[in-house]
Amino acid sequence: MSYPINDDGVALLKESEKFVGFAYPDPMSPLARALQADRIWQAVLRGAPIPARYSHLDGRPWTIGYGFIEGVRPGDTMTQAQADNLLARKLVPYCQAVLQACTIKPNENQFAALVVCAWNIGIRGISTSSIIKAHNRGDFAAAARAFCLWNKSRGAVVPGLVTRRAREAASGV
Image (cartoon, rainbow, N blue to C red; front, top):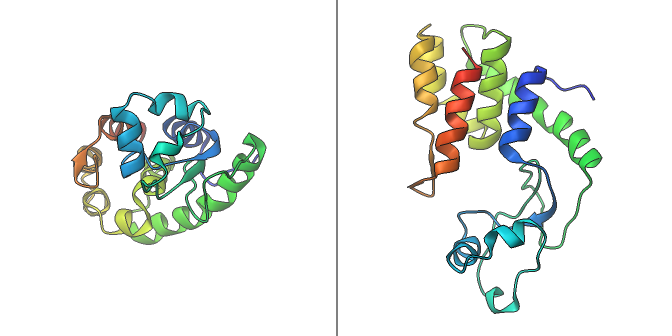
C-alpha cells in the first residue's frame, strides 16, 4: 500500500484512529455520552449492539475504519483492506492542503505530523491553525507546542486528544 506520507505518519494515524470495521457513534455525541455514562461504551466499540432504549439519541457523526465520517450510517461495515485503500486515497487532499498552507516547506516528519493532525481537525482547521502559523514563522518549537492547543471536542478537553496531540508534536520534530 502506498501512502502520501511516511510510514511513521501512517503508523501514528492508525494508532490514533484505531481501525473499527463497523459504524460507531461519535465519542462526544449524546448517544456515546449516554453509553459511556451507563458503562457500555467499550462493549459497543467491541461490536456489542446498541440497546434500543438509546434509539432516540443522536450519534452523529457516525465513524468507521480509520476515522471516516463522510456518508457513514449506523450498520455500515468495512474491512481493514478497504479502510487501508480508502485511507491512501483520502489522505491526498489533506496533504495538498498542508503543503498549500506551509510557506516554509516541512521536512518529512513535520509534514506527516501536520497531515495526521489535519486528518483529525480538518483541512480548514489546520490551514488557519496556530500550528501552521508558528511553522511558517520558522518557530518549530512553538509549532510543536501548538499541537497541544487542539485538545477539545465540542468545547471539552478530551484526554485522548491530549495524548494524540503530544504524539503528533513529538513525531514532527
